[in-house]
Length: 334
Image (tube, rainbow, N blue to C red; front, top):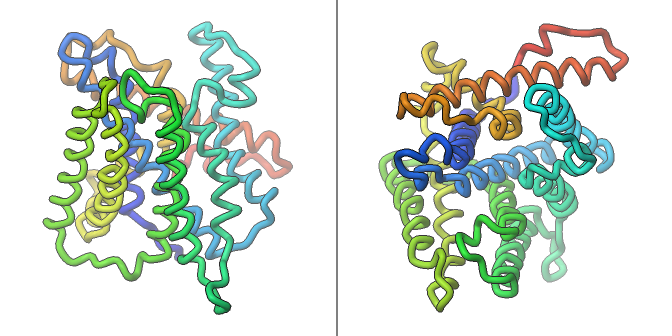
């Protein structure tokens, strides 16, 4: 049986919750809109998990790029295509060719579609060092440093942002190093020390908080403090790494195997993409009088819509396939 990485499932659950919460401004408008945050960390978690799983796939099976990339795009674009049609029918949302062809409303999908190409190219490379045989991990280390350097250069030359630099086009650049870090973590997974849950948990919290302190100092400034924001890359990367370590202890496996939480967590984990796609049409302030339960209600509605989209997409892809319909496969989200 293939190994199930419950720690990655947990990180995907966090990513789904963080990203959704960052779009909950209408739900927090009567309390404090600043509560709608954590989106940068949610995106970073998803890119890290993607890098980990992509590298694992490269280690197990070698596919031609065109076949490999087609499978990846089939996971992304049909859901966007179908949701655009559904949204047009239910909410009378205009459909444009940009929505259907390049997922214009979803920078995250555009970014990861580009990252897939880069990751395939560099994730399958080995190098030769000083005349000897190089290794994939060495290539990944070099690529990681180069991707950090590109982020620094882009930040230096980009126009000054009025808010957080991580809410600008900088997010197309800065997450590639995190995806590479995910691939490196897979290659190093057996050498990473998992010895103290409390220490790893405290480091996770420390780097999480430090990121917001750094952004608080530099965000919205136009003097020298503005440039301090780029230092936020350090705690962002380290938060992701220590979150991975914290989720690698036995408690996470126990949580996902418990009868009380197993299905809820697996549902959220396996619907991460669909949750991201549907949430913008589902988020509403109609339940604000029930705060803080309005957040749970709206998130439940989002997950329900995400599951429906998942089933419709599966049936749609089966319709295009020569194999017979399999309803059981369509409703299964594992």
